[in-house]
Length: 326
Ligand code: UDP
Image 1 (spheres, rainbow, N blue to C red):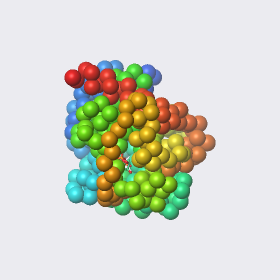
Image 2: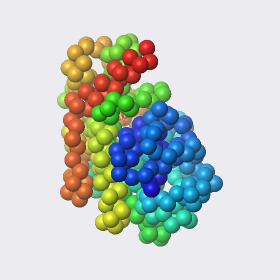
Image 3: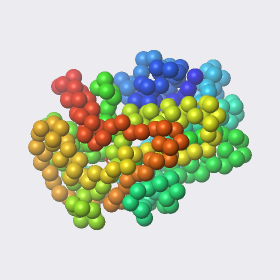
Image 4: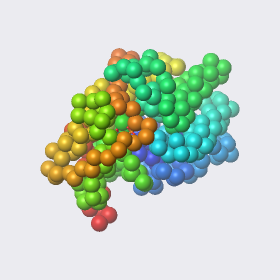
């Protein structure tokens, strides 16, 4: 049985949808940022907090857990700057409680959701796992702290782990039954699509004076189901004892500017956007693009979706969602 912490969130729920095909799954979620309608009916749901050792004891004694996948975190850069305590408490201290409980119960396989924010402002065009990690906000720092803890837990307690550093997760499940839904929404693609559906008056483009071809920020967008497959490949490798201490980037290796993302959304939906060119948002590096060669070579992972198909899947989900809630 696999424990998915945060399985009712955006990325966790997409992973669970794939994982339940071959594994028994138990989800632990406190529904702070997750939603009950995202929980897959084939999974066992426990409502509780990953920082609660009593709940963890119950799960680890009543279920035979082979591995833990940990998606439950706060992940908004701006919020982390304003409220670092929340980020260090939930992302670091609570994760430490989870790891301690795993050690106590002899569970030694762990897959950790990390982020491109661990790199800070990169000095290279294509970021590899060897690029310097200099996070510039508490969110990135909190994730890097757990990565450091994992290295020490591996050496001291034999914890086997895979760290997956996501670039910009986007898109929705092919069934259009689940998709990206944050409250409040801060991410670019859902904001554009909500605008094109008439739910927002305009799209604010944060900064037009970056050192990029059109002056707007460049990001590497990766489909949420591609992320889910990377988790499953990592799990298979861990359970076979193939790897014990690995870190992988997950991106498409191709960057798109904010303007290009808006243009692609306009093309996919055949609707014209109204744009408000505004100031830079604090904490945004100009360019973040991943090299994912390492996971391609070691685990055979390949991103199957490009920006266009990411947006097509998101649009399908957003339009369906707009219809069901109107
Ligand atoms: N962005 C924007 N307008 C928005 C939301 C985001 O211009 O309403 C930009 C943001 O500055 C960044 C890119 O879009 O350059 C992706 O931002 P998002 O919040 O989706 O992901 P992040 O890169 O922060 O993880």
